[in-house]
Amino acid sequence: MRAVEHHSNPRGQLWQVQGFEAIPEQPVSYVNQLGDGKVVTCAGSVFDGYRQVQGPPLRDLLIAELRFLHPHPVAELDPPGQLELSVRQRDTEWMVHLVNHGADRDMGGESFFVERVPGSGPRTLLVRCKERPSSVLLQPGSRTLEWQLTADGVRCNLPDVGIHEIVHISFG
Image 1 (cartoon, helix red, strand yellow):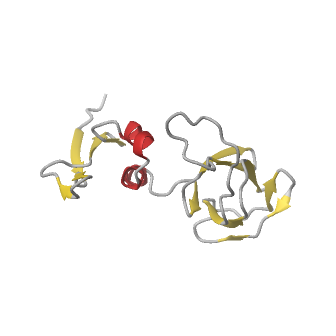
Image 2 (image 1 turned 45 degrees about the vertical axis):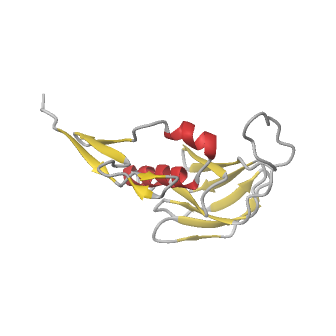
């Protein structure tokens, strides 16, 4: 059995939110390496903090740490936000699920009901793949999407996404 060396390196600088001052010797996170793997550790309840104040600095912190761990995700949206994205592969078909988490009002406190889901606005979807697809459709309805194969993968323009839509990419 091979011995595995453990390393921990500080990353970033923690700032005081109210005074916008750096807190000396307090990194935002630590990168822990164990063999070929990496774990980013953020001290504190980042998700609870974001749930309470939905502050852009916490969102940006999470995005930066995720990008550090995985700089080239299988799929990504431009601009990001509001849409949840997940990719499923079955044989020669990829399904990119898009779920709109937008709401017509602030959902904090005692507000539990969404009466209207606002459109997500036009966006660009990048799906990293090396092969040219035979079709790129928006489901339901088998609507054809405008797309192109770039050095990064398939790039397509998305219309407003309602509650849930699927980009269906076929390679067969």
